[in-house]
Image (cartoon, rainbow, N blue to C red; front, side, top):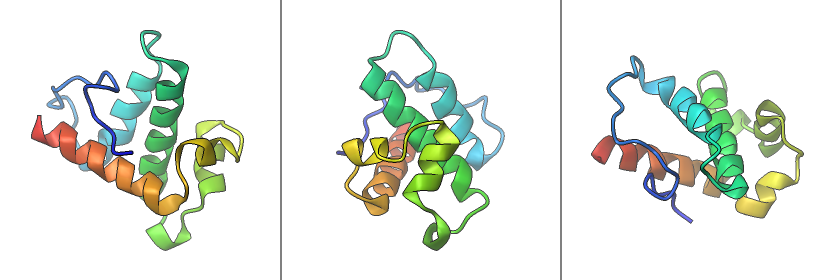
Length: 102
């Protein structure tokens, strides 16, 4: 399921970001808002963690368990939202693309 910034409550203004990899901060900040459903908050935490880890880890070395651990979530929770790493990263890239297009 491709992420939609409007469904995730993302603001269209990304001007405050200084570096391309500040997306993880934007996603993490948004995941902490109480106006979002818990499932949306969890997805945003997973996406933020994947984004942060990709700053220091190549895609081939990225593991779902590491993403969950970084997000402070149980290992299995990612599989509730994504069937595999490829789908998680595709969702992350789709969300980043949509944010940039706003």
